Image (cartoon, rainbow, N blue to C red; front, side, top):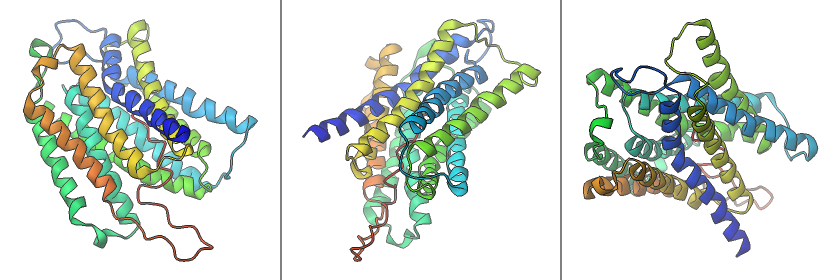
Length: 354
């Protein structure tokens, strides 16, 4: 019973953190914006909030694992292939975090951007792991039904999203295309993150802290070094400032929420949780937290229509079906060898939200 409670508490932290990530990042983008109030379009910063997310992830995803490895050690070992795969996983996570920022920049709102991301990412995750495991022929009708349900839910969420009145920004066709492209980028990157990181973990004898450290380094390079060079060189001019203390704190908090959520998944698996139920609960719970918090903050709870809620439920249920009914390898009949890992991977636990 105690271990079960620890598992629930661990992935409960992830649900809360990843559910709050989108709205909190949105606060940071608003807070760091320094342009004129009459500027058309959303008043959001882009690169400086991204830098803050990268700094927070560097602290939690690099400094903390490095200290633990130095003083406590861990099973596993460093390997070149493991480092490369783990760095690639971190790059996917960071590019996905930038995609969230760009989706907001082109007029997207957390109330529907994050549910679409959490609905689409597990589909990509499952398909990629099934493809790499060469099990496409074993895809069943319930798995395919889950894909259809996710698609129906996503369309319904977009069509019936609540209206925020004058605070909203729908934009023109180009804005819609860029917004959709940014969301698709996040879905692809965060969906591929898990399988890619699993290869890195496997190559390092299923170490947890070493791949997480590599992920943090990739975040630092992509989310901190590159944007800082672009801003300091004048290659990109942005109406934002780190001196906007409130916005900087909110952006740092968003990065911390993403990293702490990843650690929550790690702890859930350490206490005996399995991907077959932990990940569906996380992907199902996080968008609910996101929608409720964002709607409460913007006084939109009364505008959450029945079709919108139905679409949200469909997207959540479909993503859970995709994860639960993905083809799984049969247990090994050789008692001297452990069975193959499940498609999602026993160690797809360090998936950041940003």
